[in-house]
Length: 142
Image 1: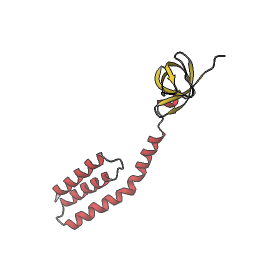
Image 2: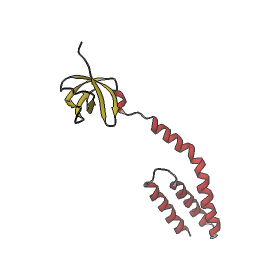
Image 3: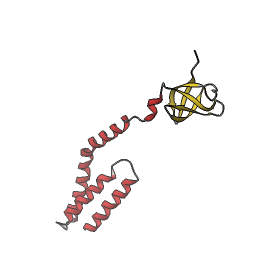
Image 4: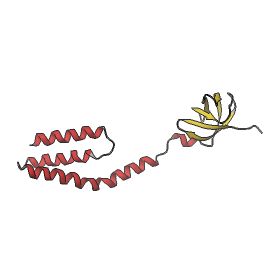
């Protein structure tokens, strides 16, 4: 029976590649444990029980690990936070009607939107990030 358990484990691992839940992976591990048990006994009932018990027991044991991994992934900040409230310069006219324009802030070029048209060369301040565009406002000269 070990080849059957090897196939089940392989299928579970391949299916897990296409999912994000880390759920099917545990059944793959259960199938590997059942494979080891099948080397010692031909009793199919014992193998299936081993597979099910191992898979079900791994669910609560793996939960703290997956919770920790997902928590650390959510708190990771990316580069875009660093440009909020920073000043830059318009590198391509910002057109409100067409939602086009580009700015340069901290040496990086960003697509930009604004509530008013802003011409190339004028200074701006980044208010927030809206999707993949920086929402900006014109900085008035003193």
